[in-house]
Image (cartoon, rainbow, N blue to C red; front, top):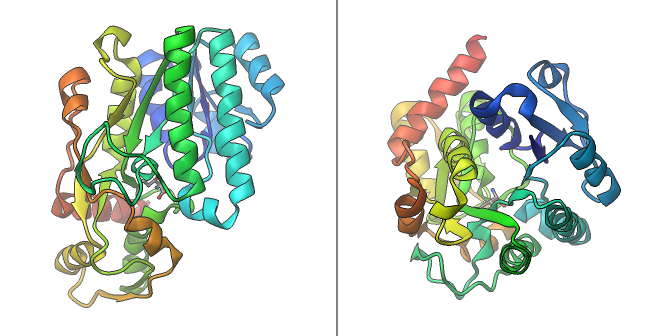
Length: 314
Ligand code: VAH
């Protein structure tokens, strides 16, 4: 059975739903420190879990016969710079608890990493899996730590640790969670609400991005992949690359010519320029068949407005 931590965040619920289709509803237990709304529990098992309480994690692992953990609990990059102590506690200590329990109980452990694990000294175009990693955010430093400690537990203790470096994930049905890339989520809701958006990044801040459905299906594919097909523990995964201006122009074309974007760069611009515009994900494609469907800004904008309009009609 699989325990998903941080289950009420941007990715948890979608990954749980997809994984439940593969291995059965009762074999995927969502957990979070937040209280879910009733619909969550109607769709499968949910337990309250504070990731900073290792005894509580171990109790669930033992009592619920857990064989694998997908560890989504994290404070994202922008929020982490506003609350660095909290980010260190959750992203480092919380992750260490999960690593130690995975070692003790020999669990499969997927901890997502991020393009945020790269920094200003990393090449920003076609960034390879193996590159300089000197990030300038607490979030990024914690991701490098998670990657390196995960690889250590894999080589020293045989833990089946695996990790994907996500780009910015764009979803219609979850509100932004304090990420630097979340302007690309906000902008759609703002376009529908007021036909304008004030962007906290510069017009030319190109970043790697991915649509949520691809993130969900490819994460489940990677999680279920046979350990022997993985030639490395950590893989870049990339899908789309655009600047705020390119995204806004596509929204003008597909939503309304009247849509207006303004720019008021803040501290998040200083984070964004240290991250890749696009990553090289050839190893993920070769080793375990990574294959995203939405690979253009045009298709992303189209699918996002279809999703939002469907939600509005419900
Ligand atoms: C963030 N959405 O912006 C997350 C992600 C690569 C971006 O790590 O912090």
